[in-house]
Amino acid sequence: MMTSSLILIFGILILIGTFASKIGNRFGVPVLLVFLGIGMVAGSDILGFVSLDNYVFTRDLANLALIFILFDSGFSTKRENLKKYAGAALSLATLGVILTAISIGILIYFLLDIPWVNAFLIGSIISSTDAAAVMTIMRERPVKNHVSATLEIESAANDPMAILLTTFMINILLLKGMPSSSEYVLFVVQLVWQFAGGILIARIGSWVGIKLFNKFKSANQSMYYVLYIGVVLTIFGVADLVKANGTIAVFFTGYTMGNSKFVFKRGLSHFISGISTFANMIVFLLLGLLVFPKSMVKVWSSGLILSAVLMFAARPLAVFLCTLPFKFSIKDKLFISWGGLKGAVPIILATYPVAVGLDKDGLIFNIVFFVVSLSCLLQGTTLSALAKLLKLSVPPQVHSPYSIELFALDKTEIEIIDTQIHEGSPFVGKKLMDLFLPEDMVISSIMREGKIISPRGNTVIHNNDIVFFMGHRDEIEQVIAHGGGEIPVVKNDIEGADKESIEKIV
Image 1 (cartoon, rainbow, N blue to C red):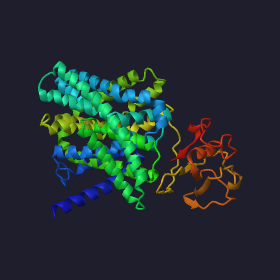
Image 2 (tube, helix red, strand yellow):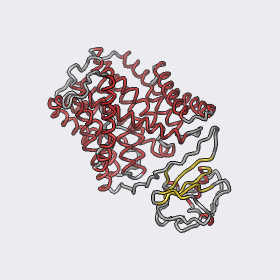
Image 3 (spheres, helix red, strand yellow):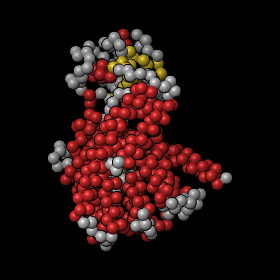
Image 4 (tube, one colour):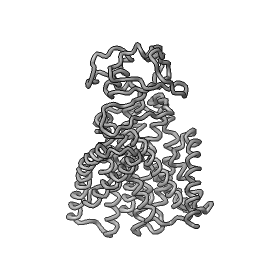
């Protein structure tokens, strides 16, 4: 009976959070903060619906959720963006995390009179940014590509470094003294293997995963979702077994598979995104339940100081130093500094010291929780306004309420891609019969004013139509780039196409 009641409560809380997030979006409040707040209200201190004080259980469940969150982060990272902005993004994801942790540690050591090892531990815990929070805001309120891509890649790739720094500082505290030189050497070796081993396993794992999808050939689409879960868990488990970094392995497996072709990829992408979103919501709901709001009274002053240090000193310092070799304006750097939202990973990492008995009174956990909540609230709600102020905003895309997918049991070069037709586009006013389309390409459907239209030869394309093309991706991109006019280069050569002018929904 107790189990049934608990399931019912969680179901209701998820429903409330889902609909409350729509209201939050109108005011720029991150969805994750909505679920965090609902968890706090439903917890022991306020309504008392659920009593949760098991940090070990929460940490383990959150780590499981993190596997799918990181895979999705890698899966949604486009190769062309990574090639263009990898230098700055990966510099921020590695060196930036270290600089943030060190500068926070030094400042709070002097400002809050916290022992230096504890100070650096707190700095390590809150050094990473949150991929889900950043990507959600960037999708809903888009900004210029060079800035959004840098922020998204950084936030997707910086969690492993924060995890390594946190576990290193915890080991120092457990040893109750400074490590010897040999232990430092061992740490460096382990660090190198964590990254190198994780990437190696990702290369092998993604190759195996793609082979499995291509050879599976099941008419039951749902079995591909099961296959995906099995692949992700296996890759993480293998990496952990050989002492490599499982989060790095999962992220780069997602990246490789997301930029490769395999059977049922498009249908799977929706499931991957859904699982990641659900994992984020559950993590924030659980972490909200884990917090006792009354305990925030004890840490609010320290939390405010730490938040100010992070937002106005540590993060900007790391951003400005790490982007020195790259072409970013002052406006770009200011936005990237403010766009370093905190999220699930810092709170998950804050459970580590509690789980091993280093934070028995929950002081570190409560401080980190306060900082993350304030970051989501303050930075998350003002990021789009800052983008407008700095003139970095771009018009949001109109997303189709329909999804048309091509389900094939074998590899195929044919895809369905939809693109929105904007005012001034050469497509506007043209009949379909007047378009110069390759022989193996068709317009499968058109969405107009929320309705699907079956295309005919004399169908005229209107402004704001969403047109669904079926054919080879490179040929579709050429047709879009040339506005349906005659294409000078027929196939497998789209170097001359202005890709950034192509606004498409893939």
